[in-house]
Image (tube, rainbow, N blue to C red; front, side):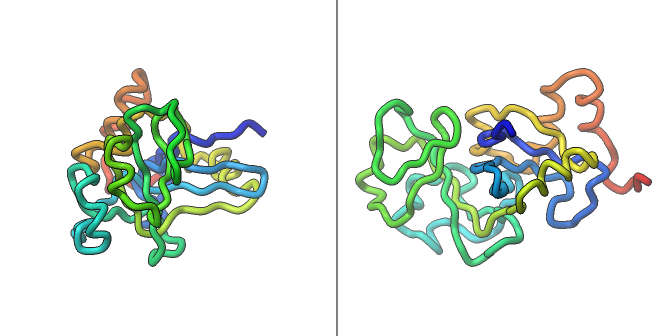
Length: 184
């Protein structure tokens, strides 16, 4: 099994689970035992400053919490984009390129020079062994390479059609699929 860590799962129009309808998920871990990811395009109204005051200066626009998924919504996962991805930074676990998770127990002041921006997710999306592979096979997800800025876009509501359009061809046409059309 080839790891899909660092890749995007993009919900197909046929995936009607309300937790994942028109979502873009970044897989932060994919191993034989399962997969873990965060939904990149579900911003909340809660500001990072209200929950993690010391980290708010590092949060990009919009500087709000995101719904990472339906699993453990009271927990937090923080993605960071590093300015210098080759330098080791305490508390940073690389997912792909300059993007990775960061330990929120680290003092954010010590990271200010190294971090180019963060995004904080309440909860996450999780799959058991073989589950995400089955869902892909069943046609629930498209799998695409992520760009370094995908997790940090200024307009997260536009991410689903944006990722589809950049694939070109028929995938670009899927970006215009009406949300209220039922697929059988």
